[in-house]
Length: 414
Image 1 (spheres, helix red, strand yellow):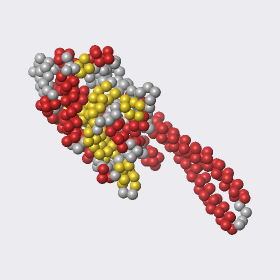
Image 2 (tube, rainbow, N blue to C red):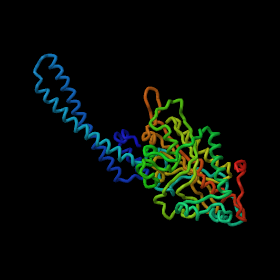
Image 3 (cartoon, rainbow, N blue to C red):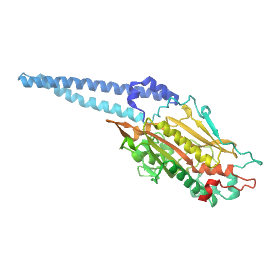
Image 4 (cartoon, helix red, strand yellow):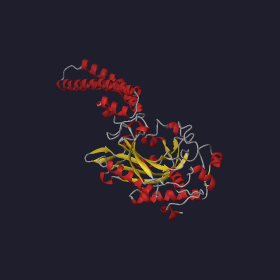
């Protein structure tokens, strides 16, 4: 959640930041109205409390001096009754502001470039040179058909569209990639965790999926539970409503999970193949960091994901997202896009974000900062999306006869 005190004290500046992220004027006007209502309710409440305190002191003085305070007593009693609706009014105004604030995205970091959408993102660098093929490279679904690797028809039969079945060598390669990712992350200091694939609503609110993106989640009928859209949810919320010590930071975690997304709003996009599925595997990195060091952790996470792609021999590029393309919870994000020769384009394979204290406020994750409690910074990123890496390996390591080589670093896992 955004810092409501900052919003209240610096409304115009906060509005400019949110406009950079594409928040429309209607929501900003609603926030301003709710903020003014809360400010007015608090002012009325504090004024009456101040009057009540002053009269209480005067009443005490009258009691000590033995003077008549009957009229004063009537006023005190009347004020006491008047406080109740004013307290309720302030509480309701605060709750209304907090409810709307849950649907307000994070402020973008000052380093985030201006821009409306993905076309305004900034390429930071390219890593490795794409292979020049002596033949026309096939897309992964054509390779899968020749090799019998991916059964799209039976995936639909078992569930519905945008589900698939990996078979034989593809299933083994998927497992090899998961193990390689987890082992590499562990060497960088990330503790491996095996977490529940179903989380309650409070956890999804903590990381920002609820309430705004409920339509994209698979809910368990009759339960306050959802299938997780990413391991970011359980990993970050491991420390939900906890106070850490400063020496514990940073906490680095990694975990493999399947991820479940309805892909609401993506009709017509990537309907063929494995790029956009309702269920997909991913290995996630999550960090809980000291605010003064989260940028260093962020750069480390970006480099780690890039190193994994390099170890696999997969050409990729590193892209900084502009304000208009930033995710809901992110203060800043760097995407890694892998080269897919069959599509002749770079496609996202990892998105690494620093949410700063946005998720920490929602999830109440704090640390002892001297004599006070301060919010941590939380970071997350894929290392990597497994299905998309499988696709990248298939397309980059294909031969003219549609056979597929296995990257050297994976052979020990195969």
